[in-house]
Image (tube, rainbow, N blue to C red; front, side, top):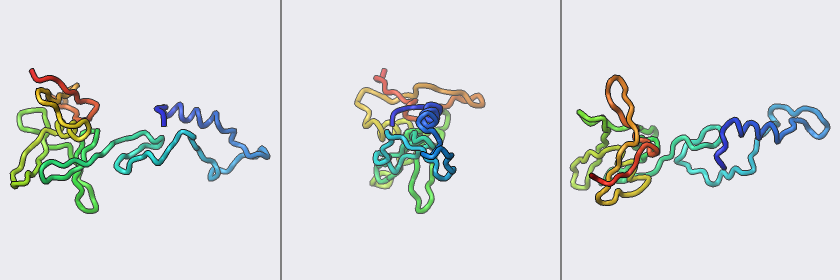
Length: 161
């Protein structure tokens, strides 16, 4: 589906429908349907959540580091499948910094804390090449503290200085 905003979709629906049957009588609400010939529901991913007009809200991909298996989202979230319910987190704030970290267990049982922005980049864009690093494009200040968004759109790769 192409990237039309909601008002364009509604305009398309109104202009493409005369809202009457062949005999000129109005249809009942239950019979009223909207279809977009460009929709292809087979391309939708089961790990992506969509809004009412089929725009992706959050894309989740599996990620494994050491013996820890999680799903990470393009919005900067991490989830671990725990039975029936999901535990979703944005990580823990690293003391004295605006960065967030998440614990990964290695095969020898030790725990390695990784920066969430690096995990998000690694899951969606692949490994960071030697001599480069992932940085946040923007920062915000909340309650006098600087914070960063770990959403994929807010991350960039830079050559180390």
